[in-house]
Amino acid sequence: MIAVEDRQITSAWSNSLRMLIVLLSMAAFISLFRLADMTALQRHGSVPPRAQAALPAAPPHGMKVVIGKEVLTVPAAAMRFAPNAGNGAAGAGTPPETQLVELNLSWPALEPLAPGQRGIYLSLSARADPIQPRERFQRILMPFFEREVLNGPDGLAGRRLSEGSGYGGEILYFEPRLAMPGAANSLFYARCPAPEFESAPVSCLRTLRLGAGLQATYRFDAALLAQWRRIDSAVSGLIGRMRAR
Image 1: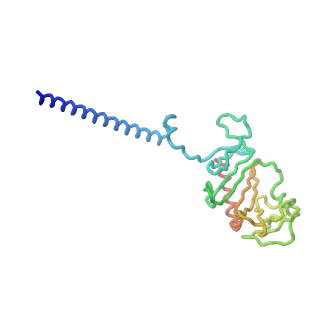
Image 2: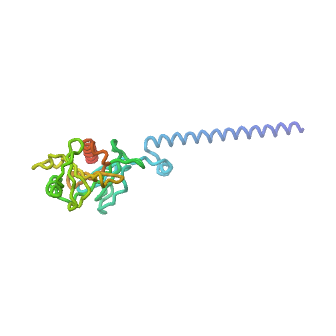
C-alpha cells in the first residue's frame, strides 16, 4: 500500500515538473517573439508610442528655420543653442523664424564640433545693414588703413587698422582687387589680431552677405589664414546646401 502511494506521489511530481517545463518554454518563446516583433517595428519605423518611448532617440540631422526671407536646413547637432522663435504666429509644421543661428563646426569636415576641439564658428543672422561688402571695405575701412602694406598668405595683402576705426590692434587681410572700383562683393577680406595683441584663442573674422536679408559671419583660427580660399569655398558651399534643402 505504501509503495502504491509512493508511486502516485512520484507520478504527481513528475507531471507537475513536466507542466512547469512546458510553461517556462512557452514564456520564453513568447518573449523571443515579442523581442523579434519589436525589432522589426523599430527597423520599419512603426513602433507604437508606448514602445517607442523605451527606444533610444534617433540623432537629429537637420532643422528648418527661417532667417530673414531665407528658409535654411541647419545641422541641428552643430547648433550652440536652439533658436529663439521670432514669430509666434507660425502654424504647425511651419519652420520657426529666428534672428540668429550659431553653429560650431569642425575643420575641414564642417561637421558638428566635438568638445575640446577648435574649428569654424558660423553665425547666420538676419541682415540689417544695407551696406555691401565692397562699400564697407572702400568707404569705411580703407580710410583707417595705416601706411605700411603687409604681405599676407596666399596672395592676400594686409593693412593695420588705426585706433580711430574701432578695430585698433587688428590687421585687415584682403584680396588686393577689392580696393579697385567695381570690385566684386564676394572678394575675400577678414580681420585678424595683430601679432603683438594675439592671445589664445586667436580668431579671424569674415562676413558674407547672402540672399534676401541673410548674413553669415564666421570665425576661424588665425593659423588657418593660409587656407582662406579653401575655407571660404567650403563655408559658402555649406550655406548653399542649407539653402537648397
